[in-house]
Image 1: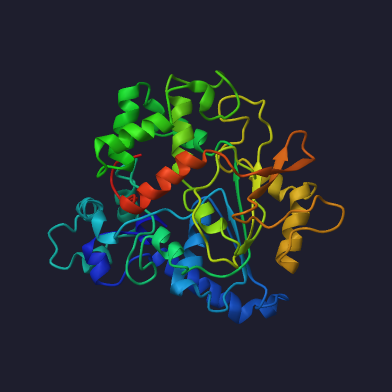
Image 2 (image 1 turned 90 degrees about the vertical axis):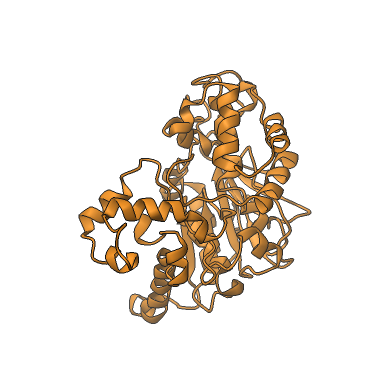
Length: 389
């Protein structure tokens, strides 16, 4: 919904209009509760599902209302995405001011009233005025009352079963098709980490990040491909860093306590871990198929698992159907998919050939991810802005 649902700024916060896109989603869930029986459904057995930005939305709904779903849903799928550690919505004032200027409302005494009169075509043109305009949920004090990491640490998260999954090389697509794909030197990589991710962090912190994510193509993403797929000297480094910090950053924060029950599509670079509420049930799958294909990570790039998930012949479908019906993905003759816990962080991993499944330990980059997780508490990323990654 971009600026229709996630416009930041002080005026937005003061008017209580932050995160309207999420409020719309919540209202849609209430509609489902009212009418699902008309379609043969059971209002007590609703599972919400999101992929990419939709996965971020699902994660935020787990935190809304102090973690109380209010009977709107009983389980969740979070696919190739997660919560972002985010700051106060008022910090996006520069974005608001630029957007207002692009709509011609900069001179209005009541800018919000003026925005309500802007024709749809002009409004969307203002959103598209910057190719790097990014809109996302921020802390507004109503729907989202704090940095998601802080809410999770305080146990303010829905106590429901969750399946959380990713693919191996989430960052490749986001790197090759954005300005990050132009990073080709160590100095440019450093500047990107400093300016786009942690602008308030001191230089020694940036030094440590660069040490954890070195300029070694054999360690970057696509992972496990040696020197192959290096579109430029920094490409694999950037791709590996971007999705260590993207959808997985709060994922395992959520899923590394004993409170979730879900499968995870296996990643080679794991989620960021933090203690969850002890009874949260989670399963986690990791998608590692088609590794032999070039550049984007054997086509294990962001959302590449969709065709596998929605293919009725795929072995993951039965797990998901069982989860929706019974809140337990295991059953039949399929490999048992255990709950992901802090003591036993097991991923259901999808490998080549296409019917190959195995359980793997989620121990990838533990030190690096823990370091980034802690930084995100100190320096929340401000997503709503003109410019950046």
